[in-house]
Image (cartoon, rainbow, N blue to C red; front, side, top):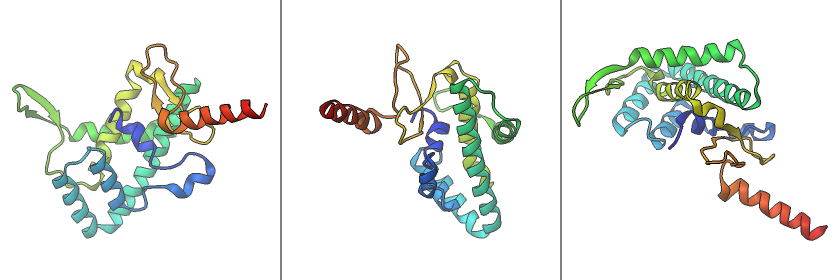
Length: 193
């Protein structure tokens, strides 16, 4: 997976009619998504799921924070792509989560020698699931690649991607889906014309 923050924004459709497509229907769904995305190992996912059952109010609060973070990341990155500055509220939302993620990191011995930053493997805080997402977004925003963030050119989509093509000409979030649909539409229009 390239940028977890970009993939996280894809857990909901960004067209108004797609709002019912939200994958984040529960805290358990958030943890499942993070595990599938490789942001949590099985032990951490199980630990968070158990803690969420013991603390349902906290789990509901973190789920709402996740949705708010997702929206803030999406709006900030779309704004960057369109040359608009982010709102103070969106930057504050991302900054608060990124700060929490950075504060939780610890230096650990790396298996191949040396040291590396890592989150404690036994972290039980339910917002731990948001740490790699917020860190990814902060890293992307402070990276030269931020100027390569694009919104899919397919009017039926709205998903984001990082255009890493040599000539910066990528237009769709995926060639297999949106790109193919666009080519089929153009072909059909030519056939009718």
